[in-house]
Length: 257
Length: 264
Ligand SMILES: Nc1ncnc2c1ncn2[C@@H]1O[C@H](COP(=O)(O)OP(=O)(O)O)[C@@H](O)[C@H]1O
Ligand SMILES: [Mg+2]
Image (cartoon, rainbow over all chains, first blue to last red; front, side, top):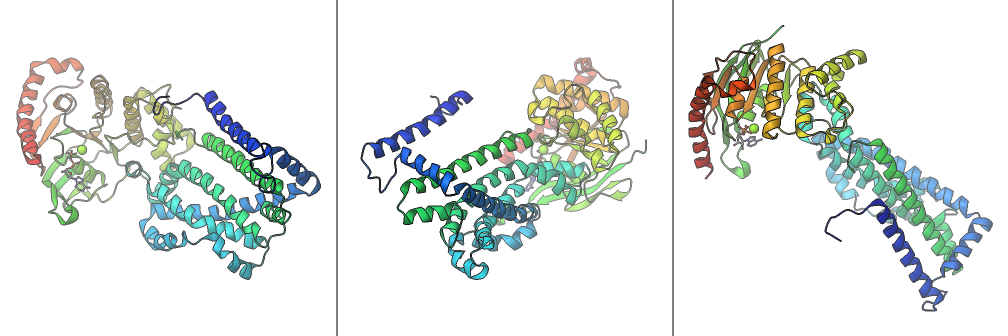
């Protein structure tokens, strides 16, 4: 082990899988070894069984689909607002000066604290669930996109100007392509946060979704189901993260991400 | 060739002082007239305002006083009639070599076929064949500056503004690039303003060398280079070259000494 020395891809996979193995082994030891009573923590086997019955008997796949739909929907709405606004703010400083102070305030508003208000405004339907995700992610996303766009290398902008680019051409042909890989990374990050907000939204006033299932399981004190639900979120998160990374590498072959 | 005359009239630039300090006078009133097809080198110690002057001609910076005229019309903003190559690497990382060279052509709305034809011509002239589809990060510094030069030339500017374009390259690469630039200039005879702090480079390329004083910069001497074109590297060993070099070294040494004294 040398400082900053890279590891081979194969070693990376082995090491990464290794910690999962260690984690599950510790979990198994704690539960099968009787260190933790089953009331508080289900064993891995019990969790898998609970998951199996959730999927086969209780239509949990439907809950997963609903939750994914909400996350993707809320995230897309947030991105559709935040990316264009952030780009404009990053490129044009008066626009940034206009929105930035408010956004810096709004980004600290906790999305979960809006849930009672949103239920009042939008009921307990899908609009409320999407709103929680949008409120939770849009302000942060605008600020981060503006930061990325604002960090466009000024010498590239100057080069473009000497090649005949006007204001809009600079935005379209320099700022946007320069910022695109970082914006994609930012979106990947924020998609992860959207998962947190959706579960919070589903814990209160929902009749479907992974969060709702976890709440139901709590009433039945079924830790196996709860852990299975949480693990499913983790797995979906991991898979989307990998897909996002692969897509970014394909979309931006010129960048070294 | 519809070449235009460049006139720099009393161009002055001072930068506002930082944190309430006194303003920095970067450029004293500067006069310069460049005829179409001239190759003028601007030689001076670091910090004497060479880049400032060139940026004002490019329209990237505004003079505090005075003006820049291109065929009688005042320059206020950058435009494709003044191509620029910077010392730092400014290729667009998201475009290939060919994409970079086509940038200005696309901006002018030329048809695809014409873009491709012009790009191919400058790829050949700058020795970039086989690298068309490389990303800038895959290129050496010399290759990147070739591409930057091709990108500026493809736009067919009236004037080429070169701000120490080979300054970051190693000595051997730099000499090759000088020969490449000379070859292109000898064929096209475009007006060139070439900023450098390298005396050999200035003499080898230019038909006129302007020596700038230490900050605040002004043109303190003007030395014509009466060496015939086409030139090649062997010229650097001739007595005429040596005599010019001795003269310019004398001029520049005083300024470098002043610049160091001012900084210390
Ligand atoms: N944007 C700026 N703000 C403040 N001072 C500047 C700025 N640009 C250049 N200067 C100052 O002007 C002087 C000339 O700079 P420059 O033209 O870059 O010199 P050169 O290219 O000859 O090395 C330097 O002292 C530099 O610090
Ligand atoms: Mg400079």
